[in-house]
Image 1 (cartoon, rainbow, N blue to C red):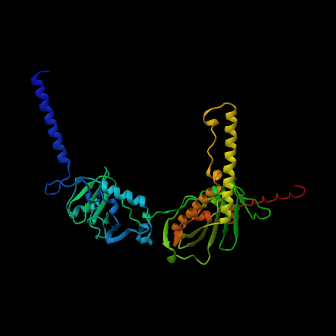
Image 2: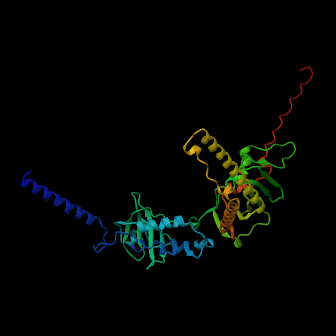
Image 3: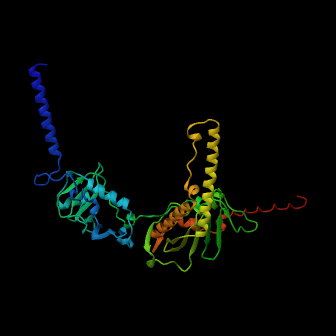
Length: 407
C-alpha cells in the first residue's frame, strides 16, 4: 500500500469520526435557546429513588386521583384509608421515570399542548396527569401525557413551556384502587379440612375430608332421596381462598356488615382457620375476614407430618442399607440425612408452630380493620346453598295416555 493510499484512508477515517460526532451532537436534546440539556427526564431522581416519600397523581380540574405516602408501616394509599400500596408497581413506576431520557423537543406552544396530552391539569378537559414526587432535594412535578404510537411518552415539566418526547412507556394509574396491594390470601384447596357455611336464613352447608391425601370432599347433610352433585362442584367450595384478591377496600368502620350476613369457616389440616363474614350491598359483594389458629388441630397436624417424615426416612434408610449390602455405590447406598422431624421432634414442632403463627399474623395484618369488595365470582364461591351442591332432581316423564278400549 503506497503513501498516497494511506493518506487517503486516514482522511476518510477522520471525516467519518467528525460526521459521527456531529450526528451525536445533533441528536442531543436542546433547549429553546439552543443550549444542551440533561439527557435524563428527571436527573434529580436518578440516584434518589429511595428518597421519595410521597407521590401525588392529579387529573383534570385539579382532582387528586391517588396519593401514595410512606409511613411507619410502609407505603399506603390515602384515598383508601391508608391501605397498603403495591410497592412493586410503585417502584417500577419510579424506576421508569428515573431511566427515562429526553428524546426530542416538541411544542412549547400552550395552544398545542392538548395534542400531546400535556396541558395543565387545572383545565377541566386536561387529558394528561400531573405526577408530583416529594422527598427529593426539590419536589419534582411532571405532566405525563399521551403515549407516542411509535414509542415513548409525551411529557412536560410543570412551569416549563417546553414539552418533550421521553423514552419508555410512562403509564400512570389514574385510579387509587389500582395502586393497592390487592392480594388477600392464597390458601390452596388441598390444605382445607372442612368448610362450614351458615347462610342468612340459618341453613348450613358443610363439606369435609378425613385425610389431606383424599382427592375429594364429602358433602354432609344430604337429604333423603337426594345425591351430592358432581365432584368438581363440591370441591369448588374449598377453593374460595385460593388466589383471593379484592376489587376495592374500605375501612371497616365505614362499611359495617349488614343485619343478615353469610358466614363461612375454612378449617385447615394444619390448624389454620379463616372466618369470612360476607354480605351484599348496593350491588357490591363485601366481606370481612379473620384468621386464627386451632392449637389442638395444629398439634394433630404436626404429629401427622412428623409421623410421615419418620416413615419416609425409615423407608429411605432401609433402601440405602439394602443397596449397600448388594454392593451398590454412590447415592443409592448413602444413608439419608435425618430431617429435623426425626432428629429433634421438639425443635421441629416449635418451628412449625412459629410458621403457623406467622401465617396467622400476616393474614390478619391484611384483614384487620378493613371491609373488602370481592370479585363476584369469589363471592359466588362462598354463597352456596345445599341445593347448589346436590344433583338436580330429574323431572318425571308424564305417564303414557291410556288408550281407550277398542282403539
